[in-house]
Length: 206
Image (tube, rainbow, N blue to C red; front, top):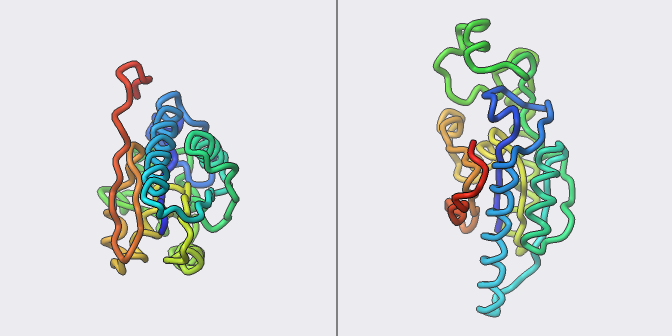
């Protein structure tokens, strides 16, 4: 059983820039999203305990700072402790795209204009073969192993993990959603979106 989480909003997300392996701190909204995810996971754990169905829970995260920050908040709020870092959860490398906005990318590389999910395609970036190799390895280690794994990862890596789990084509995988106000449960061959409770009206705006 895998709870797959994308990190909350970052400064570069807010600016509409490709991040890849560049790091960027969570915004106040991103912190609020992390807290909301943690609260929802705490509810799920409590429901398991009430049903006498509790098992081992394990928190893992990508090595990048934004996922470490997210996992730290989620771990504290949900009572999951400190995350174990797994390099295989790192975001796809976007090479020459990193730090640029989408309009800047489309202006410099017109062949990418209108394409959704440019991971594995970026000049100088991580290849699709490399992304598949590490995510397939991670998934093989965690698929239905009896542990509730909470994994904090990224937009592109999370799409590939879900695509592999569902047996989707690469093009179908590129179109998967990448929410920061919800996360996904991978269990029994299905992927289910789990909503967090709405943020208070006083939560920082994007």
